[in-house]
Length: 150
Image (tube, rainbow, N blue to C red; front, side, top):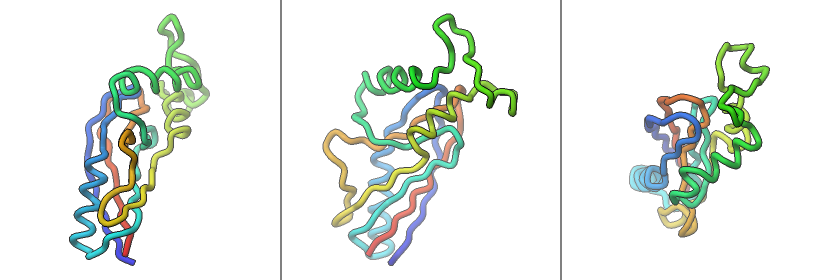
């Protein structure tokens, strides 16, 4: 089985910004297929940040600018209805404000694995692979793409 690895950098904006990384997954598969002479297998994307995530969703304005953030803020709010920081025990450990961010990223997951067939990822027409910044501030992120196949 052949293995191909690629790392790509991203700049994110804090508190649930999203970047469509579908084409980056597709490009990593295409490069792996050319370089390693493979056509079928899996690609895993892994974000190395402690409070970032990878998921699939329909990358449309309502979902990207409001809906996912709204839903996850109900489960793990960053600030209350008056704009005050919501307390998490985590804040005491590091003196920061991102306890809610850790919960959001744990719910979503830092990795995603997608099968590919005949050199193309097998996602549906409304599925976009998405990097989600769960931290409360802008960050530099990496995604490690690892392709394995035959």
